[in-house]
Length: 309
Image (cartoon, rainbow, N blue to C red; front, side, top):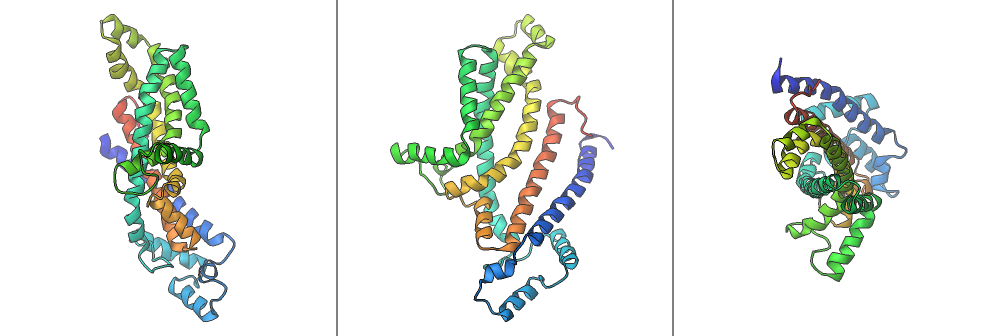
């Protein structure tokens, strides 16, 4: 089978064992860590009857293999169980928070790309000059400042001192600016260095000399020809880093009180809400797998010479 359908089928066959490994790993990690989630949730004042009733209700009194088999049945039916705290379906709670996290991750990705491409191209075009050095310093700052340090600094500057942007909250586009920049800064720094290296390498290729010899202006050569080939390794990193953005969103969401899946995961851990923690980790992992599969397909769009095996 050829074409996009064949690629999708092959990628799906590869994704199945990965999904199995993720589901199994999340299940085992949460069941084998020391401590009893029921006792941790109910507290020391719980009676043995209450503990036994909760174990029975959530199937935690069954053998581990039976719990594992039952969990797989639920996952395959799209059922992630119910939460300890309010007995609501886990999938329903995750779906209510997931759009906010995706919105933040996509905004952070856009911030990173919008900063990295012009900065990396400028650094490559002025290789060894002042602009190249300035871009390297900016990239170094972005890598050196972790989001748990950058976020409070941005709040102090833009919310407390200048009073231009809200320090926390969700809803208006203004609420998205500081969290997106905080989450995307490190990725922007990484991409800037990568774009600079890729563009420098492409500028030495013969097809660039040919394009210039035909009389094309430098902007057309860079943005129409060089970037098309130079962006392939950048797409690789973007695909891999999108999963990192989802994971890193946990800290950023807490700093800016953003109601996403990261905040939900922290709340679930604090409340010892075992099914909800399991569901959140599973959804984040599956999103990471999906994004990487989409990245592989995007390779073929950018460069048809690449075969996705």
